[in-house]
Image 1 (cartoon, rainbow, N blue to C red):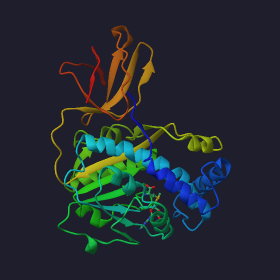
Image 2 (cartoon, rainbow, N blue to C red):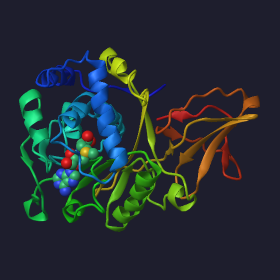
Image 3 (cartoon, rainbow, N blue to C red):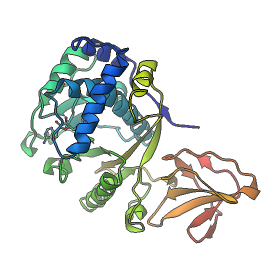
Image 4 (cartoon, protein in one colour):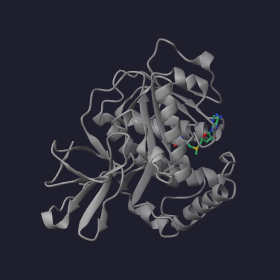
Length: 338
Ligand SMILES: C[S@@+](CC[C@H](N)C(=O)[O-])C[C@H]1O[C@@H](n2cnc3c(N)ncnc32)[C@H](O)[C@@H]1O
């Protein structure tokens, strides 16, 4: 059972309408791909540079590529968050580094909260207000500071791919009830996020996902190279697939590193999470799981006849009786997905 997500259907008409203003359509695969490639090359050459929103090619690349891909990725994470009722009682969202409001518009589809968008560039706001009328933000701001934070509202601070441009979370974010942090699934950004997770725990936050515990992260403390990331299968429309034929990157699956944290504690959970893909080895299959400070793998010997495909990033119920050999938990029967 794969976790398969797309972007909201309503986005397609809005993207198409916006592209008209550049005299382009969704069928102009090659021209669209050229803009995506230009922005991708820009970020490779200048990883710390601000997003060049003033450039026509950057706007087009965000509309036809980064908006759909990031929205599908966020849909997968919102699905995980909903499984834990993470958004319950939240009233207000601050989307920092909102860009084309990708995270807010995707969350709004399932949770129509009040959205305040912080984006230093003006162009994204203009595009969203003109071409995405289905989404109404409470307000757009160019900057944000603690003095603007409402003390009597339960606020979610949302950072989708916007921490990379910062050295730490801004101070006001530590005062919010909830945090949703999404980062590229690279080793560097992923491990930085695991360090931030520990800082959040030390500052009084509880981790709702992906962690099922609040002990030290085994991927950070027991390994110098691991980083926690989830995998989401992406179903894309034909125009997107056509555009991709002109690009080196293919997106049948999308990865993301994320942390969901709240000041309120989550309901107790007796579960583990798969944090790796299935590894096929001689005589057995193994898959990394997380349930505490130890770096552990589920393992099932081929001679048991178990043929289980467990998606990465899901919660699983472990049997009470498990044989442990070194860092492997040996399965004698299929396990239950929660
Ligand atoms: C990589 S984009 C991510 C956009 C969007 N959140 C998404 O998920 O697609 C980062 C955005 O953060 C904005 N940004 C970076 N630093 C900022 C700051 N200090 N204040 C406001 N916006 C900022 C940039 O202009 C850019 O649009």
